[in-house]
Image (cartoon, rainbow, N blue to C red; front, side, top):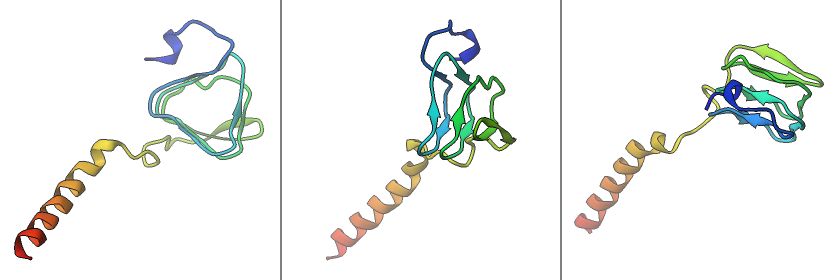
Length: 96
């Protein structure tokens, strides 16, 4: 869901695939667009509606255009490795 389409609430509205680093502080009716990354210990005091940016600092500001692209691991990323591991285990069990 696009954060810009959601009505205002008293809590932050976070888009999809957002990486939030440890110790991040945010509160109030602010919005974070999808695919953003928020650096550790940042203090977010206002909305960031541009998707795919890196946010950091106190107060937080845009510091890069990389976003969360290389920071998130999705479950489907593990499927090929899991299948290969299962195949090796099957081969070992069959051999021994």
